[in-house]
Amino acid sequence: MDQLEHYIEALKQRDESAFEYIYNATKQGTFALILSIVRDRSLAEDVMQDTYMKMVASIHQYRKGESFRNWLLSIAKNQAIDYYRVRKHETLTNGDDLDALEGSQSSGNEFQLEFNELLDLLNQEEREIVVLRIVENMKHQDIAEVLNKKVGTVMWLFHNAVRKMKKYRKE
Image 1 (cartoon, rainbow, N blue to C red):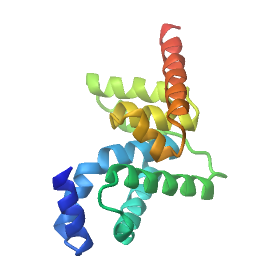
Image 2: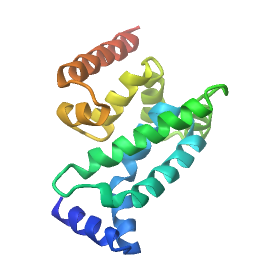
Image 3: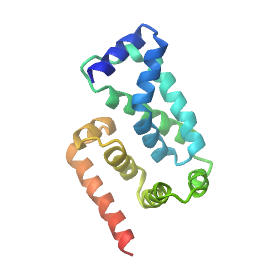
Image 4: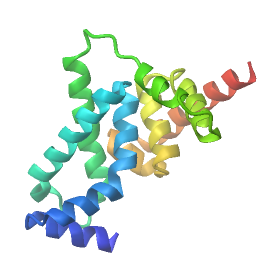
């Protein structure tokens, strides 16, 4: 993380190459969290852009020593929820995700299809926790911080979500 902190300080000085490094280091988990909330790939891409614009605009509010990833994911979560609220009258589906994934028959895409199907079983809160734990490999404590929940609640929700997915797979 020392290297990331170096780039964060450089970004505060408006170093464009620092942004590129930070973006590449954080984009996968950030996008996965946003997608788990808005459930639409094109909307997620829009929210992703807004998230990083807000991150750059508020980079001076980030305090060195805190978890940058948690700080960024909090921005992403809030942006996604705001976006979702504005567009909640529309029907949001993950059809674009399925169309993009069905084009190839590789085992990676089959796994992604199954994972998306399993995520559809979960409510938004459970999806967020599962994505952060599995895709981003975050600890329950860090997830609790990002989602502003107690660690015990996060662990309970995660285990319930896993139980739901296992039950579905057995059926």
